[in-house]
Length: 94
Image 1 (cartoon, helix red, strand yellow):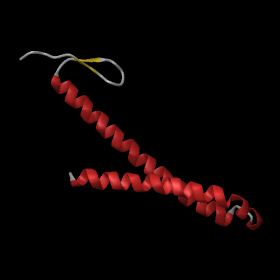
Image 2 (cartoon, one colour; image 1 turned 60 degrees about the vertical axis):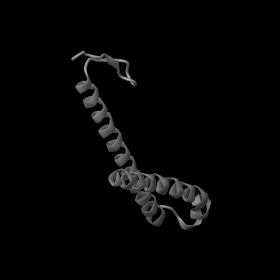
Image 3 (cartoon, helix red, strand yellow; image 1 turned 90 degrees about the vertical axis):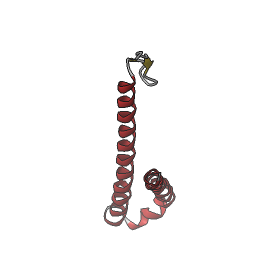
Image 4 (cartoon, helix red, strand yellow; image 1 turned 135 degrees about the vertical axis):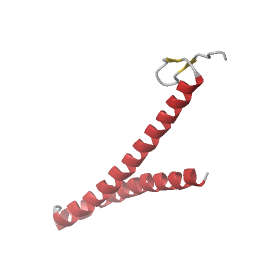
């Protein structure tokens, strides 16, 4: 059984055998999924925080000034959450 030497695509370190390569790839995939999940949760909590801050902290005369920015924020945050859930469902289906 010959040992093949691969290099990590991200950091360039040498990986000596196939088991280490599989372990590295599995760890990288798990880290990627965890970070995506955290990003979706942060976006969701930020949307909730914006709603509560608009309701309780922003005076009524300033809400119309922030309307365009808040709408754009909600579109982007909802896109992040929807992309995460769509990708999770697609991966689970495979």
